[in-house]
Structures are given as structure tokens and as C-alpha cells.
Length: 213
Image 1: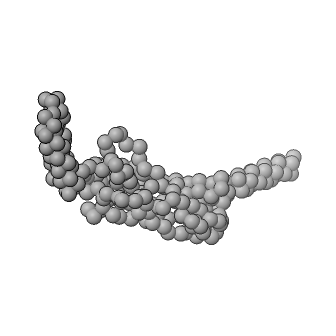
Image 2 (image 1 turned 180 degrees about the vertical axis):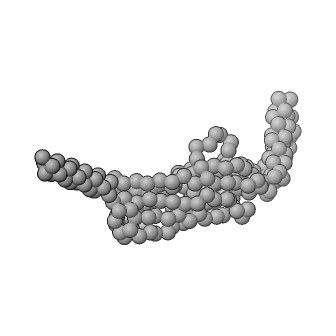
Image 3 (image 1 turned 30 degrees about the vertical axis):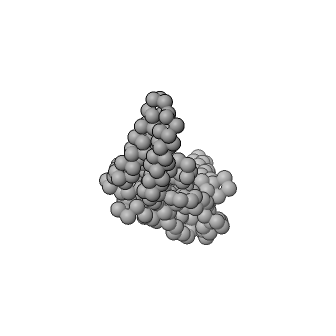
């Protein structure tokens, strides 16, 4: 009788041991993580934030990284992330190792069409000169009163553009914003959220060509 109890206990222990081993095998799937510290934007408007990729459970392979800006209300100006798209050919992780990378963070503004740029400096002078010549032509032709009103309105618009050029430069909106770094390889993904602090007074860098993401 005691022998049967001992065998029963032994069988129970073996079952528990096998079950525990199977559970550990199921959770030991190779993967990776990405981590980065919180970041404060420098006054220069150009900064970089390091991140680290870590192999988990023997993962080895190539990992790409991309960044996502926060979804902010209209009128809020936040820095841009500059990864240049997914890094090519990516970061190569060996089993149980780490790899470091860097994401650029800039105060650059989106690319603006030339037609949408404000009229500054010498361009404003050409506008006023054109308006003046138009006025001379209209006087010579004894323009009607409505055309003179149009001339006056044009001059006011030109003067307004000049006044705007002399105003304060555009700056980022101060505050703390979350952005996301995502690492991916085939069907595996990992992400981390970084809190990005923007101090007051950081001037927006105007871009003349394709800018950061």
C-alpha cells in the first residue's frame, strides 16, 4: 500500500516537472526588445537620442527601426524624427547580444512649396514696385474709383507682408510629447515610447528640400 502511494507521488512529481519544462519551452521564443531614454531638445534645434536593440532567447537576424511622431492638435509644432526611413540593411543582432543605434531629432519644418512662401526682403520691394507702376498706369488711363481702391488694397497687402518678415521667428511649441520607436523583423515587432521635452524658444529650422520623417 505504501509502495503504491510512493509510486503515485513519483508520477505526480514527474508530471509537474514535464509540464513546467513544456511551459518554459513555450515561453522561450526568440525575440528582441528596443529601449531608449527620455530626451530633451537642445537649444540648437538639432539633437540625437540613442536606442538599444537587445536579442532575447537567442534571437539572431536583421532588425529595422522606424519612428512615429505624436498625434498633436493643429497649430502645435513638435520636432521631426530623422531616421532616413528604415535603416538599410538594418541592424544585425546576434544571439543574446545588443546593438546600439541613434535617432536624429530636429526642429525642422516640413518642406514648403515656393509658391506658398511669404514674400520677404527684396521680393517685397518688387511687389511694391509693381503696385506703384500699376498705379501710374491707372492714373494715366484715368482709372475709375473702384480700380484705385484695388490699388490701395494691394499696397496694404504688400506692407503687411513686409511687417510680417520683421516679426519673431517661428518656434517649437514647448511641452513634453511622446514619440514611438518600433523595431521589426518579419512578423516580430517591439516598440518603446520616449518622452520628448521641448523647452521654450527653440527656433524652427526652415528646410529647402526633402526633410526628416
